[in-house]
Length: 220
Ligand SMILES: *Cc1c(COP(=O)(O)O)cnc(C)c1O
Image 1 (cartoon, rainbow, N blue to C red):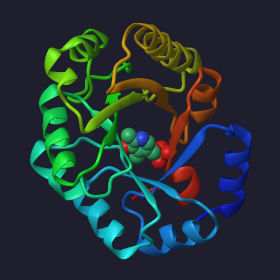
Image 2 (cartoon, rainbow, N blue to C red; image 1 turned 45 degrees about the vertical axis):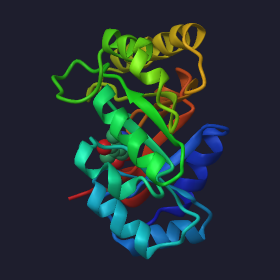
Image 3 (tube, rainbow, N blue to C red; image 1 turned 90 degrees about the vertical axis):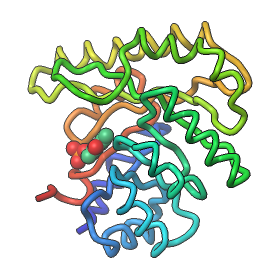
Image 4 (cartoon, protein in one colour; image 1 turned 180 degrees about the vertical axis):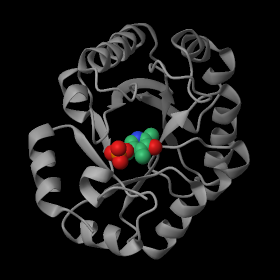
């Protein structure tokens, strides 16, 4: 199921923010339908599923990895991935750089920052992100580019809380944008907002939203 009227509606209401259609767990036919209606950016959270869909579907689709990435799986997506939203360590970046070089590519990455109240294993604290951006090892990587940041707000009905978390990330992003700029740090993109909170994310300055269930129906 692909809800085209909703897609059109959201796309118009958020422009010029990029809408990434999150197709995880959804069949190829849903993606194909969305593609035929003009959607070219899809997000997946599992490497194997992403690779299978990439192999089967149109080669001009831009694939976004939005879930946790293990270092030993980077090689499978390095030949084609458009943007990795979930970079959370220097070691992972080193592996992405290595695999990008093998494929003669430069891979764009976002640093995943945790902003939610819930405990999570993934993402960097703001302090860790700054340490990463200042690491001398990063300066030597010629096949990656850090083009922005990604964050997920708390799963809560409290809109004030969600505003606060997105605003906090926006502020941190702007601070880093003023402070860090080099041949592989170009902070331009802020990936914030999902089906339940993309309107708030837009108000807080998101440049990419990642929307799944609102477009494809709920996942089981
Ligand atoms: C699943 C997922 C989304 C989309 O969630 P919906 O609520 O279905 O819009 C966005 N971002 C990440 C990181 C996800 O894992």
